[in-house]
Image (cartoon, rainbow, N blue to C red; front, side):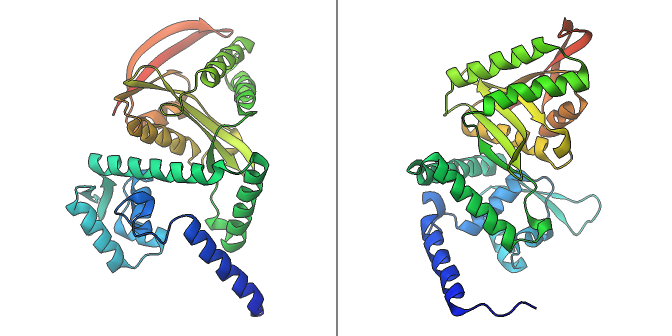
Length: 309
């Protein structure tokens, strides 16, 4: 057993805790100028990012007292945020999910969280931001058992990412599907247009990282005031099976709702089975198919998928 830490270390940790809880607004009556507590916002987050959760799952994930969680869920239900469906495998359990009103409420809170975090970081130069994030990862890694450390994290794009997106598409689609360099050229055109015409209110790029390395990405871009396009979803082979692809698609859907879009559309190929499965899980519907010859392949079938929001 480790020796009891000296008083000066205990004091330093408590001092940091006081500083950081004030810094992120935990001491305020409502988080992000909302009527919700930090715990309530975290429960909404879990419901927005997972399917078929039970109250037992939430208690285990968040370490909450069952009675306390029950009161939170009852309050959400009264406000029309929560939907319940009886489990088919255990009649004693109900699957919990956010209602359309609940998703709308969470989207607003999520936007507030992003805005507050961006505001906190905006006065810090990029090298200092990197040091800060590295220190946060160190704290998380030291305090959490290995199995509790997130398998990946998400961030927005920064200089250098667009070149990586183009490069990895060129390499992986050549290795896995036999596409030639003309496919890489198409990707370069797409990312160049994204950077040159970027609308931060209506568009977003998510970069997934694992242990400091980029392992996936996706883009949501504006097609019209009512329609968004999901583009360039990719997960590295070494990181497949960790839920990265599903999380990236879910982030696109949440952001599109928050941005006021009525529909998301995407263009893909029929042979991209893993991606097509993710689109189906998210509720997308296949609406069109067309054979074509492109990128040194003569047997391709393009597909258009849509999701009404």
